[in-house]
Amino acid sequence: MTITERKERQRALREQLFLDKAAELIATDGILQLQMAPLAKACDYATGTLYQHFSSKEDLLVALVGRNSCHQLRFFQGIAALSISSREKMLAICVAENMHQRHHPSHAGLEQYVFTEVVWQNASAARRQAILANSKPLADLVSGIVQQAIDDKKLPAHNCDAFDLSVAPWALCVGSNALEQTEGLLEAFGGNKDPLQRYRHLHMLLNGMQWQPLMDLRNRALIAEQISRLETLLQPWFTSCNVE
Image (cartoon, rainbow, N blue to C red; front, side, top):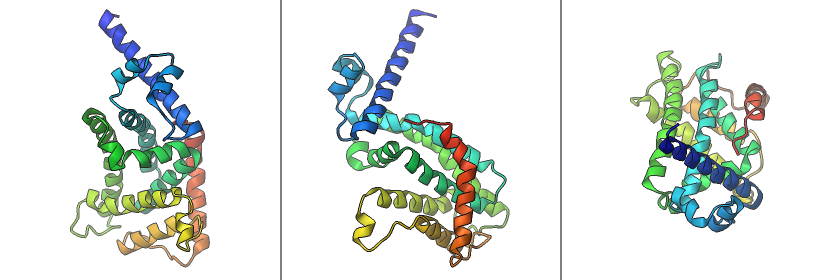
């Protein structure tokens, strides 16, 4: 190993140490309590050394979310390979996102936080580009599920390409996460904690897109059984993986 290679390896290990400790502090104290100087001290490094890796706190947070995207990619790859219908694969992605929120609440909250304008715009262009590059395979996998449905004559194209059609389920899933993570918001407007609500809404959307087979939205027992079956199928992936 050359001196340059050794230095690069040491830098990479140091950066992972910073990210590991940041994730630990966020899990215990919350995102807003994370500060750069205490983080550097907790890792036994000077604050200046930390800033050699991350230009700002926002830069570090974006890097942390980007690092964990590899785990999400593994989940999506597993879902795409399941021997279930394309419609159930789309539903399984929504189930996986909800399970991720329950198993790793601090990281789920961080994902929501970093894509706000105040954080995203204050991260470096390189970090933003890295997370977009990491997310491209995720988008491709979801688009592939949609394209499979179109090719199998289970979903009309509606004069759209596969990615365009995938945006609506994606937006619904992300929006549901945001609303449910804001404590008391839904309840303040008369909502409830119905665990099937997001899935019923997704089925409404997929029915409207004419994605076969259509779901009888009145049959709550059938929807509940479907979600329970998918959660059982996905559960081993979450118990064997720690993203934080």
